[in-house]
Image (cartoon, rainbow, N blue to C red; front, side):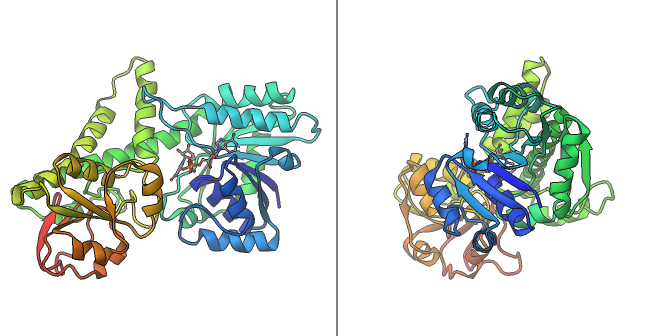
Length: 427
Ligand code: NAD
């Protein structure tokens, strides 16, 4: 059992905390946001992730998980995991202010400590961040020496929102970037409860692995859309083509060739831009990354064009089913639904939207002028045309009657579409 402090209680921090606490570690969550801290201490959670609330509730009852606004309460911890946000700056690069702030907070809280501890970054950060930002910030604020009084690691997170608990518990891999083997041994011990192969490496390699993985997956989506757009134009079924291509032993059947509205979410768009900004700083071309982003920006508008070919959009009531960027999450950051709604409003359509979990976040975070329905069925009943923007499974069971239905995400089996199915964005 290790005493762990987790700085930042968002999607990554809360999942990490809840799983480690359920595996027998003693965990304290530190966040600056009081509602998040209060929710955890009440055995609840301010975000939606399948299975997360249950894990938090049981760990808080057992006494293995608690939260605080005050990092001084974490000063006995042996391992500090930084899980704060790394948003995008105007030039596309990663904003590391929260990372530096968290590292300073940790250092200040540990000034009087004599026992060795490790500070590990779990947020997605450009290569060099652990060594050049986290390490000096902790040294300066604590007066201690890295490699002697404390260790430094970079352990990137690869979870998918909507599958966070499952992905964290049964990881495809755990990457432990380490300043030295003493730092890495401590993280290796903490992660011994997590299934999945472990790769130990240097700090910048661990930082770069996360960017390469996300850029690769984003590129796969833009590539899939390019192929699928062509298939649709030629009257070819993309999903059969995908299946056949994936029978090639060099193309994994698990590869991410999912066609649709494109990628969204809090990670792919900002991570591709951040690594592209780093390449530009190195005077390197980024042909693949540039094309990935350009294709992704154009893709959702294809769905609107498809509807506009069949109907005059002005004054039509368009029902947008789904606001979250993926099913099984309440996160609307960079969701393609927002692009659809914005474009529909521009074209003078009236928008009615619904999501099973993301309505509150839409109300808080978006200023788009869309009416909100209280159920998927109400949305269908009140709309002239339906767009599927998020593939929530429950949308399959709604009664679409004879309303025209367009898919931006693959939801229906081709054998069993709604009565007035108008097709998918690229199938
Ligand atoms: P988030 O925005 O949901 O949460 C970040 C939290 O950090 C917030 O609650 C904020 O209040 C808190 N915070 C900021 N500074 C703090 C400080 N000094 N002390 C205490 N709390 C502080 O972020 P997220 O989605 O969990 O992502 C966190 C990082 O993990 C990002 O770098 C992201 O790119 C990466 N990541 C995210 C995912 C994902 O699916 N969300 C997956 C893998 C990696």
